[in-house]
Length: 326
Picture (cartoon, rainbow, N blue to C red):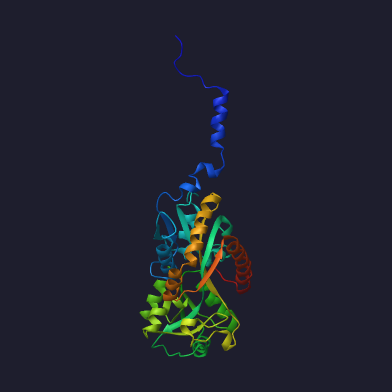
């Protein structure tokens, strides 16, 4: 009896192998079909903080320039490692985008992340903000000098909240310690927002987070901002001095941007780059940033990648200098 199973020729085998080995752009939908479904925007921070607020404002604006919406998904924890790892491990098809943060170029130097910025395909940087030293309105300190004098008088007793061990705000406070010879009691939280809530509740003495993350409470008279770690004053708080004005040469801040897993097809990356560029030029995004007291600092993918490389090198030497321990 003759077999009814069809014979598989060598030509068919070769064709099958060839299809399996096609470049990635062919393995996924072509850019013309992207996006064909909603895009998940992973935020590696808590809801209510500056990173979350920026992501939601951006998602609202970019929907004008994409056929599918971006859906924000907060995944806080481990100073951003949990959320950024989720993006890094995602299928590189453009349907999971990360809101990456400055901790990306800090945590590897502390042994707290097994990845670096090189594991991501940058899309664009959107924002940049300095650290601000902020206390409760009823705190006994009205100037940065009074605050630092208290910290010097009783080393390790003034509690300073941050957005996680090894976070940019932790590093900002440690950098201040190094510059002026004080010692804080660092208290980590899963993002800036929980730290700000703890300050409101009197559980800690101060926070070193961005102006935008405390703006509502400062404007309501519940907190007071003593100084910002910037080269120039923040327009929304133009009465608050910079550390440099007070003789402390220190400028440290965060940035936030978009990135995809490395290996995402260039055509897909470019779709998001173009849509992000249009969103960045949209007055609605500027208005959102102004309301949130967040600084606009757009960079396209190549320039963003170069900026991350510079920051990676800078924080490597800074971490080594001040001896920060995880």
